[in-house]
Every structure is written in C-alpha cells, then in structure tokens.
Length: 283
View 1 (cartoon, helix red, strand yellow):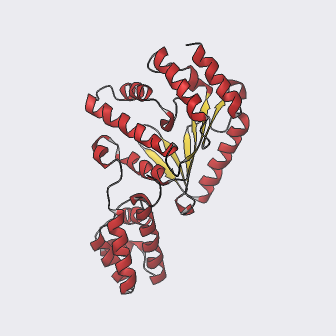
View 2 (view 1 turned 30 degrees about the vertical axis):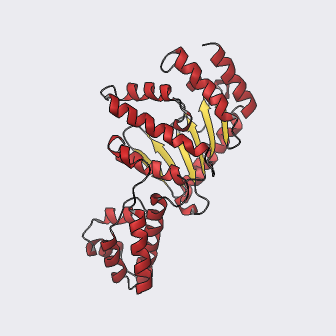
View 3 (view 1 turned 90 degrees about the horizontal axis):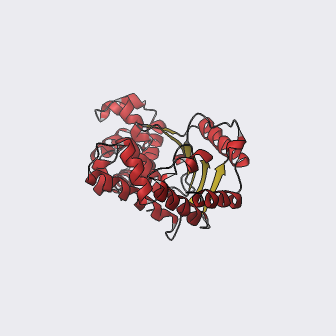
C-alpha cells in the first residue's frame, strides 16, 4: 500500500496547481470561480484533500497559462489521483473524515502515535477491534462490523510488507488496565503487543502512571511523516466524530516536541514489554 498512492498523487497535483496559480498571479477566489466551486473547495483541491476532475484541471491550467506539455502531464496526474484506494470496497462503512487518514497512512514512511484510552489501530487484534467497534457503534450490523475490522487488519499489513512502515507508539498505562472485550480478549491483545513490538520497525513504549503530568494530557494524536513529500507531513487528531489534520510548521513542531517529551517520560522498549507480559499474566 505504500508509495505513490492516489492520496499522494492528489497532493502532488494540488501542489502543482497552486504553484501555477501563484506564478500566474491569480487569486484562489478567481480560480474557484473558473471551475464553479467555493473558495473552501479550491483550498481542499490545492492541499490534496479533495479530488479534482481532469476536465477541471484542463480549465485551471488553461487559466494559468500552462503550456500543452504541462497540461497533458497534470491531466494524466488527475486520472491517477482518481484511482480507487485499497479501502474502496469498504468505503461506505468508513467516515469521510477518516478516509483521508487511511490514504495518508498507506503512503507514510513513519507514524508516531500517542494513545490514551485504547490500543492504536495498527496494533489491535480482530477481537479487540470488534469490542471497540461494538462499544462505539452498538447499532452496527455484522456487515458493518466486518468491514470496520477488515479495514483495521488490512492496515496492519504495512508493518510486514516489503517496505514496512516505521511505527512508534506510546500507550498510556491506562490502556493496559482497561479490560476491553473481557479478560481473554485483553490478554490476547497484550500478547499481540509484545509480539509486534519485537518487529525491527515497531517500537512500543508505555507511559506509566508514575510519569505524572505530561504535555499530552488533553488528547491522543498521531504524526505522519513522508520522506519523498515532506510537505505532506501531518499531525492528526481524532475525536470520534471528526478529525483535525494539522500541517502548519508551528503545529508540526509542537506535536513533535510533545512526542519527544512523552518518549522521555515513557518506559523503554524492554521495560514496556516486561510490563505488558506482567499485566497479561494477571488476566
């Protein structure tokens, strides 16, 4: 799933369109008027968060005075950006605000995440994921649950693929003691954490209660890094009903600092693994 996904292509297209517009000295409002969309939609197009049809790309590149070679290249890029992502078959069961995250995660080189209440999705067992999904959406039928769990398990293939995702996760100690799905499910989940933490590209740290106050007490967050497209680097905050995607330099600097602070307060990988084994043995 990693590499030049549709999400990356969409971002590249948006960046190129914005560069051409600015070079031509055309305001975003005028560009939006040209293709009959709102300025807000134009902003999403230029930041790669909304697909733009090849016909609109042609209209915009003509407005910007791009030559025929550039127009042809960007029209082709628009076609590539419109290809379905790996989760397309389950898209109706995925909130729109989370689809962007899935696209980003699929292409990211590294994810650094702090989790307060639950095991991070990339590390969840199917049974644990089912218990979380059922608690959050008790009205879901079996098809919806199967789709949500399937997406979560498919995401985990990035940990063991040819070019694996580098994953650093810090779990609040409370995550270990919240019995999700019953003792057996929770024991299996903790054992899964121990197993995955031994992968060379995965690091799991536990932030112990003894750490006291820390700079991430307000919320969980994830940081996504893209080596080939650093402009895509994003801090992601989710509240269950929506999400924030923060890519401003100040926001990225702040959340990277917070993660580094948490890492300093957390137990090392070895001690974290020992704690996971001990808690699992008590269930």
